[in-house]
Length: 286
Image (tube, rainbow, N blue to C red; front, side, top):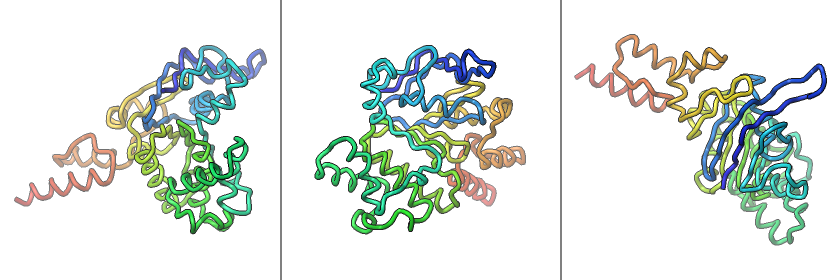
């Protein structure tokens, strides 16, 4: 099972003076179980690409296939594709509206015509997947929760639809550091515990470095680079050319190496840096 984009081109406002080529010659495969990061500056095509994955947009040219179903080929199958590919937009908590958390998470499954027993099971499972104690949270008002908790409830609402793929568009936008850490901890746990494929769109180089297995870099509607975080962030100059940077800790490591610290050049997290610097300090004190 996979999402496959073949020779994708997407044009906004075609046939008008405002015609814009948003995506050009995109070829990409995302396999079941992957944790993929998509990065790029504003206007690079990130949002358009993820909307093609679940049929909110249809390619101008080329095709997107989700688990062997071609997106847009059969309008009757579009609903099924949108259930298969769950998309969580920025600030999803603004879409919370029910009087309790459980009712909010149940809204999607209820519209699938499932039995009450199945709906209740999915709600409990989804809330627990994002780190809540079901019995403690189910009757709470979503409006009384913290920003990070609201975001997790919104994600649970998508998970309750049982998607094979979960797309998160800037899932920590507007959250304080505690809320950001809370969200990413649960996303990482979710990926490990379930077989759901996670596609993370983010401007944060640090978040991408910590979480994903593969990075797709978009620039001017094209795939500019693709590889593991270490492979991508080792090309700092190339990233800077297209308006991106590298994680701050990677920049610090770069400077430390210039100052004679014998530490690995491909460090991307504070935890890795701490271990390497302590090793170097011990070597120098021997």
